[in-house]
Length: 287
Image (cartoon, rainbow, N blue to C red):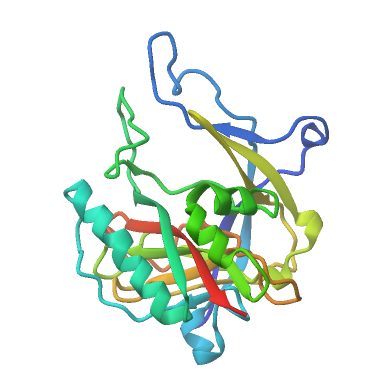
């Protein structure tokens, strides 16, 4: 299909961020604290319209995680729904096997997952350790890992034995996101992926993501008309996206992949709200 023209959400270029680092706190409600009533971030976004988003299907086999930073995998999951925490745990194991096969990895550690649904949530309790916790679509074009936070994530989630075996010359370590729709045919809020080779370093703004007992760092993307965006029209559950968020291998290849969901101008009226599951994995391959 031809490309679509759509609106994407970017971080604003504010003087504030020259003095105060962008941040976002993901804190559960507790006595005396209501995250819906109290501001828990200093993020200000802006919409840019009429952005061309090309259909990956038009590019064929040339789109791989090594050149564009993302790839469409062909894989039928054993899980169509997630009703138990055990289902999510097994999906993580399934993802490890998938990435090991598709990327020729010698070791894969899936350390995180997230269920999402494009609806408004009203709740007065939130358990960040609940594997079935479901959130809405993430805001703002972003990359989940920075060059500073990548090594911290790798050190946090790999065992001592694995680090001793693979953290040395001859091995390449990437942090890879997989993103799979749970809708039979996705129309509502699909994902847009940016070719990082079209991103200037100054387009990236590091921001803190603060959760209980940990602080992570992500990149938010500011607008540049040179950005080249892609999507997978009418994505099905057997077409998960894999995209890189961090890569220890230096070079001009795609080493990260900003992404954000968007309102699909071609969605049929009454399209089912998007449901999806994403994972984050440390993938180790031989150089």
